[in-house]
Image (cartoon, rainbow, N blue to C red; front, side, top):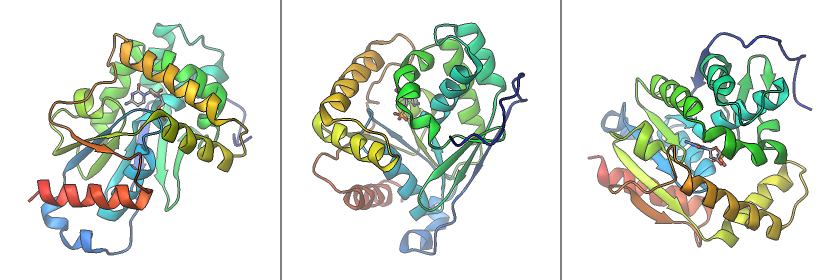
Length: 257
Ligand code: DC
């Protein structure tokens, strides 16, 4: 239980802040002038390693990490806590427009706060994971989230991660990367994440869930999971996290000159 207070009965006013993690000076940062203000969008299916990779790439560049999946999870968490039905698009859309949340990127974790509550762990719970595809498929929710994401990235220097960031949210991104991996590898990674949070599961269960979510997310009407035609595709099945980050940093340097 990570909630710090009793839930408010009214949605708090719209507010969001992303606090960048300032990494120590690295070789990448020596090239800050050429990289300043850029938008790097990373897309891909669940478990492709995009969250960890995006957070570490942002840290290496001194950028802000925008975890759009965490935003959809926060909406889902708040809806479940507030007793809003995951099929109620109108109420969810209003909530997505007005709820208050904040990211605080730390070295190891991207903290998510909804109003007063630290929901970093709770938004990864099986219950939220089960409902997030349905909640995020509502047009009303997507319109609100996309507007807030674009607002948060107004000044650039952002690594935005999420399945429509290269196609819908930031079609003008300076570099687009689509991370992919086979379903078994993705399930094994998710299982490790869950274990780290003390949540029990099996690789079969996670693989079945990933296949179910891929199908739902790629067949839905609003912002289905698609690859942007100008995205750089990186298969991470046989790469370590460090390998993925190095590969992407090299790609960024080769594209942004
Ligand atoms: O990346 P993730 O597993 O934390 O994302 C959780 C869910 O949110 C995912 O099932 C689909 C949805 N999502 C989305 O619809 N659009 C995004 N940009 C990011 C996530």
